[in-house]
Amino acid sequence: MKLNRTVVGVLVAGLVAVTAGSIWAAQRQAGPRMGMGMVPGLSLSQLGITDAQRQQIKDVVQRHRTDIQPLMQRARTARAALRTAETADPIDDNAIRAKAAEVAAIEGDTAVARAHLQAEVFQVLTPEQQEKVRQRRAQRIGRLQQKPGL
Image (tube, rainbow, N blue to C red; front, side, top):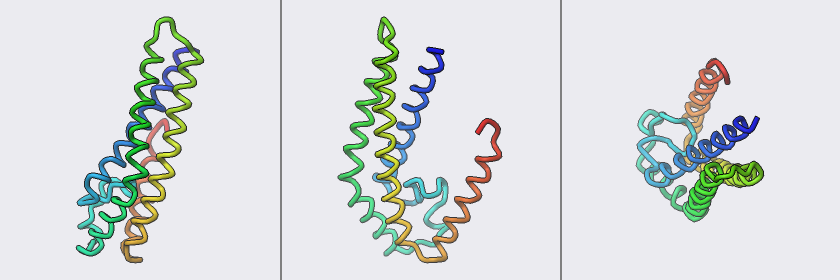
C-alpha cells in the first residue's frame, strides 16, 4: 500500500513536470509548433498562420509570461521537496502526501494558466484554423482513448 502511494506521488510530480515543460516550450517559442498544449505536433505552417498571427501569438505568450514563470519556479521547488520527502529516512507517509498535494495544487494552477493561454491563442486563429485545431484535437483524443490502460 505504501508503494502505491509513492508511485502516485511520483506520477503527479511527473505530470507537473510535463505540464511546466510544455508551458516553458511555448514561452520560448510560440512557433513553429502550436505548442501551448493546443494540439501537440500541429505546426503553424499546417494551419496557414500568417506573419501577423504569428506575432499576435508571440504577444499572447509574452503577456502570460508573468503568470507562467512563477508557476514554473513553484513547480520546481515543489517537485524537489517531494523528491526529498520520498527519499527521507525514515519514510514519512504524511510528509510525502503533503508534498504530493502541493505538487498537485501547482499542477492545477498550471492547467488553469495553460487554458487561459490556449484560449487567447485560439482567438487569434481564423474560423477555418480553429476548425483544424478542433479536428486534430478530436483525432488525438480518439487515439489516446484507444490505447490500453487509459
